[in-house]
Image 1 (cartoon, rainbow, N blue to C red):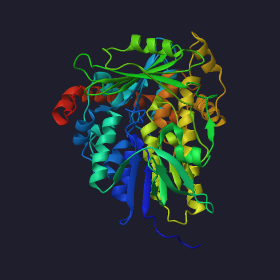
Image 2: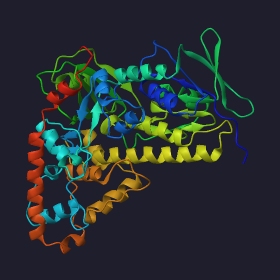
Image 3: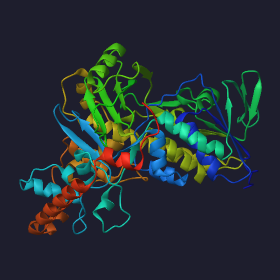
Image 4: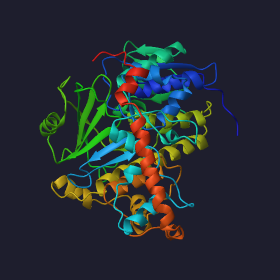
Length: 505
């Protein structure tokens, strides 16, 4: 196999969170001698609702050498210990999907198996009590994780809430200091090479041509390069994830408390998010247009927020799914250009991050080897499908019958891969991760139990441990987590002390 010449010119089409994440990472981490150019237009808005994240964002920021306190101050950020789900299993029910695990394995047997065995013996309790993140979140408290495995704080894990527009601005500043060139303008034409089919250059208004060796499509839902120019195709997941609209609106904070978790509240035709930042609260209603009009959705959102609006409701339209190919020729799609799964589990920004990480791991030369491209596409497809399954679980695992949307949600067919996972869980609470699954076992445990899918039995290996030894361990652990959370500072006090926002409401 003949190696090609090194990639010297990288062109990113589109800014926003995806574009500037890519620019900041590539400028810092690719071999020297390659230029990075980002093209964006101030006249084209960004979606900008991806304000909640999952813990791997910490690794991305660390990879770029970003100081946590400075990042939170610049983005009006807050800490996130998990997601609270309200009214999903049934109206009046709520549970937490916390970061980190539940308890500790006992004699090599998963903690939730012992929890299930105790339940059969008449001990009915919420498994949340055995997650330090859940206990701290419920108490409105926060402390950073400890690197010392002997410390109880080693059980802490966190992500962030932040203003996505401010994050893009923050990364832009770093990227431009590292040599990224930003060009203002809208792309009017995309020229393909007649022999290879690769993108040769893009043309801006005024006939200015921008040539490149590698192009990153961060143009949002349009998919200007990956779809409009290269025809990647789109796999529609509406049959599994029926919501196709969102209405978003920021509100002013009320009171002084800033909850260290995202809230997702099931509504008549979808669900509402609440994301607390230092300077405001992000709100939105994700819904099915087949079950709810835009006006009805806006009214539902306005009636469900807990502070005065700071802007008018904004409607977003989408189709859940992914591109059939994320990388074609010399074009790699990132962010909304690559696909979209609704922000139910805060994965949107993570999918950008993991796309960048895979690109760096498989960074091409100008030969654009098919084996590297095929590997990237297979890995990207697998991760998208894993997210799809986890989100579909939330809709499938409901007992609500109070509206057509929820009656259909519980009866809707699910992917075979998800059906197999649920069937295995229902029997004896067994879970297995495949292909580097994004969601840890504890995440599946949290949602399955939280929405009422309790296994019929348990792993019989749990029976080899005397219950008289197990029960005191549960009691000690519950008390230890409660005490540790009580000793933590209030979340808003920790923020004020370590990273007060530099942004005015």
